[in-house]
Length: 180
Length: 218
Image (tube, rainbow over all chains, first blue to last red; front, side, top):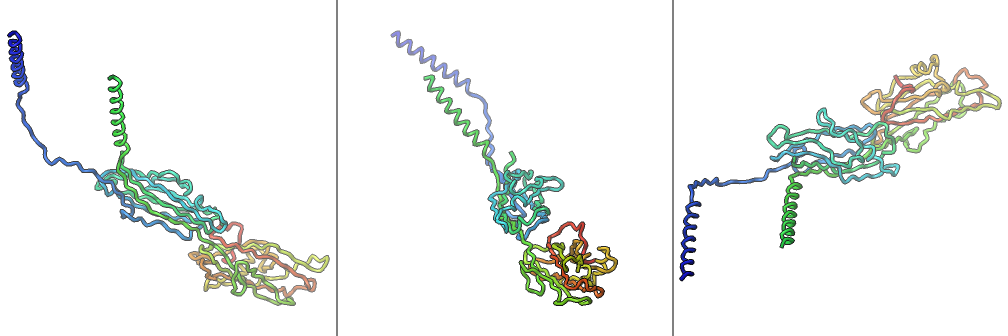
């Protein structure tokens, strides 16, 4: 009997607790739903001289001491994310000339400017082992989304017959990387 | 039980670290490559001739007539062409290995009695006017240009049409040096049996300084 009373008491306490609990949790609510939320990744796309795929390589078949050839290269960021532009010279191959020695890579010089700003002081092709920073390109449609640089290839007039018949071939990789 | 919780915590931290690391390294980029940019040097190779048979090892030798005597003249022509792929804008002339010989004990120099009576140059289809008077002034010889005086100086030439090279690439056979020599009509018997010789060294260049050289034409 005693046990039965105890059990009934516990049950009563339990119900009271439940009722009090329900009263505590109940509150006014209002819900609004923003529908159609969408997340789309931006794009980062580089055009070189107006092309997005094939870039015509430079080809100079009869250079000689005193050679000085400025070439303008124009870049456009046609994506929606600003980026940082760099140039990497890769896969250089030299062929010897009349003297059987590969001399041109040391004597073919590269200078890069953008307006009055020098991006690369005169440097031999052989010394171009690190990426060259060419500055920033803003996202398309904003000020600064295009940029022109002048790459000047040259051979000093003091260079002699040792470079006659030499050849030098390399790739120029332009990399537009997301600005962090 | 504690050890198990510690291990789980460490694993969790590691997983979070990997995720954060990937998020830091990943970014967008776009690469465009111009492949096989090619730079090849040309060549400048000069060939000479007397009559038209140009060769890289031709000597272009001038020889006076047999039994050359006072008053007699002969023309000497040296023709140049550039068989390479680079233009030459200057040709330099140096007279080297200048020698003379006469009878034993004689100091007679035949070069003093060989008079250069004509100096002309052909550039393509154009031949310069007579330059011997101008050259005599340049070497300070008082109007008569002897071979001895001529050999004391170095010379250069260029195309009077400065837009053009003196010898253009591609074997154009476009430059001649034309001289006329005369045995001085007043030479006496002391010059009988004497001789003289010299080498005319020609160097074709793309361009070079001309200080110290006399232009062969005005």
